Length: 223
Length: 223
Image 1 (tube, chains in turn orange, green):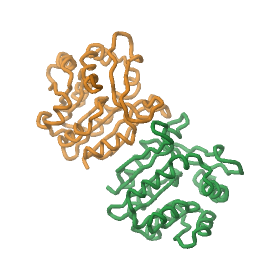
Image 2 (image 1 turned 90 degrees about the vertical axis):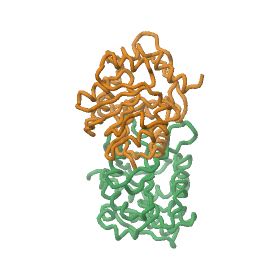
Image 3 (image 1 turned 90 degrees about the horizontal axis):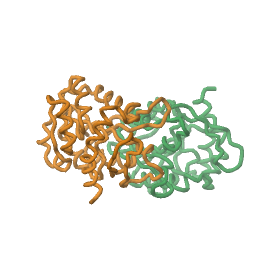
Image 4 (image 1 turned 180 degrees about the vertical axis):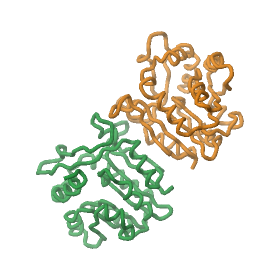
């Protein structure tokens, strides 16, 4: 099985433990800084309509709705969307693999003032999806990408390539290892520009001032 | 003396040892990757007219001229411009402190197809100068900023602030310590955007594939 397929499959395989980890706040970096960072970035755009792409079990859709946004969640994993709908039957959730989303912008139901990708661009081939999402923005809209910080996550090899997350930093239970594609900063910049977007802002959330960044957050607008 | 004044002064104090270090190739990171990176970035823009801001003893002006560009060098240090002119009497060199350049774009003699700042933005207050330089570009022109990589240079404190270069990694001789202002990636992005520029490309030169980047190089175009 190629890493892209294995990545998709791992979300279904980990759906239950993942849902529990998110809902019980078991991921230290998320509690320390990165949840707050994506929420701040959304708040700064004050979106009326928001799409959370790769929404998983739906926490960000629920949070965006609490901020007053009309929020939609899309994910490729049926099991995660089921979990999202069960907790939040009133929001719009949709099962849609990224490959299909990249080919069919109409299925996404835009335009949106903000599209979030919160640790949701973990594959190798993402420029097509980003370019499609760019066409689903309102003129003043933004795509907010939060992801692993290339410098903190490099782990001694600073070059693009597949890596494996074994979830050893996560609490207990049986996790299925997940392949993910490491990108350097230069590579992220190329993909963003290649999708017809420009980086209007960068945030580097950390647990405290001066500490190594726990993530990187790109605020992307259409060029 | 405040760090900005001390920074300017250190260039004059170190002019002789600096000139020797550059001309005899004594700075390992420059030989390993960063000289080639700025030259590649210039080549990619194929500039007819180039301004090297903070040109020091002039090596990049000489190299750009060898590539066929009409190259001008400006620096705040009289001693370094003297060294530049002595080796290369035919090129245009000008002593001009950054504060004066920021206030008087006409003094710079634009428009330029490329403006290089090769380890030449080491102070705290740089947005005004960058904004002025942006007005000196041709419509398709670019500002090329190569500087210390925020990740490699953080040294355990990832936040903006004055640091001190003691030149201990450099060979022999008596160096005067130089204050320089560390900037996070997010801070660089803010300064670049604040100057009316957008990052069209990022390069992260390294000694070999996968090795930690030795510098970061921003290719900036007008928004």
